Length: 215
Image (cartoon, rainbow, N blue to C red; front, side, top):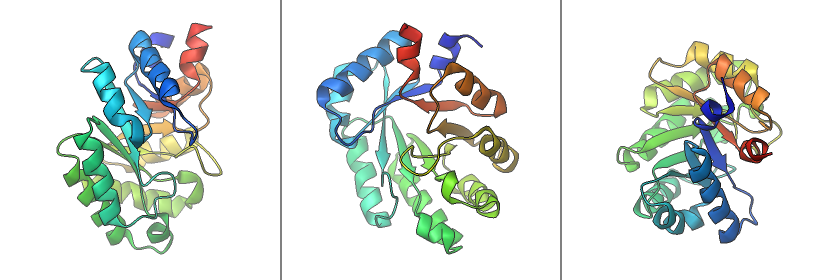
């Protein structure tokens, strides 16, 4: 798989708390230049970015990020606001406290509510795999499969670990065939990205790959 094929699966990402519009605009320019799948940016910049790129590039943003412990109502409001502002794709963080407590019905209902709020846009569910046991990872695959979401996503990139090939393989084994996988967090080389894709990932969340392609 060549670099361009990999970049076409990349959500070119900037989610640092200090991100400025100029930095987000640069990410958009790079996404357009290198044909990335989308740009993944803070909610504050969605409207401006959507107006800037028009229909030339998908705009993705994050909900309940990075901790996931807002109420479902707040996450639904965030989602509706992002869609109004022009977001094409939504990456939401699950409530990890519910997952750790085994309240899978609570996790499911929250994802379903946000999916409904997406009004047909792509929804990716961030499960923060580094915080889950193997049994919890299998259970969350089942829940995401039942929810109607489009993707399961490994990580926020803001916790104790990022994507691993082992987790991608585990997800591939346990999700339903209509749910895709986004590997994100700590993917800094094309070799790492290709390994994730070969393990079963359809999308890659990364901030470093475009700079490598330019080098």
